[in-house]
Image 1 (spheres, one colour):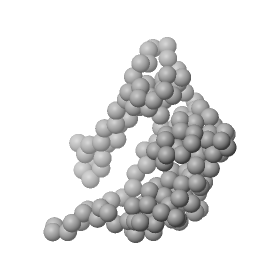
Image 2 (cartoon, helix red, strand yellow):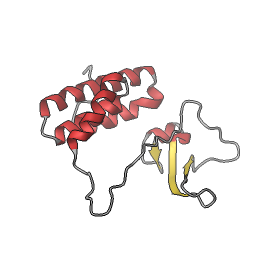
Image 3 (cartoon, one colour):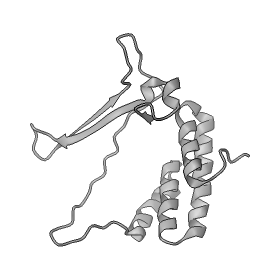
Length: 153
């Protein structure tokens, strides 16, 4: 996926170009929000959308601290506690990558390195099975993690 042609992948599949994301309170249903995702800004009346892309919002509940309570940012142990079961039970490389980042920020470089290797292997598996969808994500992960472009090299 790209944002306003920010990724080389969107030139091969323009439907992968995410233009904008909007979130606002519903004017008609108090207590609800409206989510809007615009894609494929270069579409014409004859353009076709990709059948290889799934656009999905992932919504997680948030608890807002009460008055006087500070934000819970930097609570690495809580993040690690939530991410470890996800990374262990899922083949989603994103969970492993986020766990590696949280472990690294918490001063646990050995385990962080192990999860980075796991994430890289999972990205490689997905990129082989679905190159049109995951090759760019795998390359982005490796670039951010300072790893070579492929685990097989």
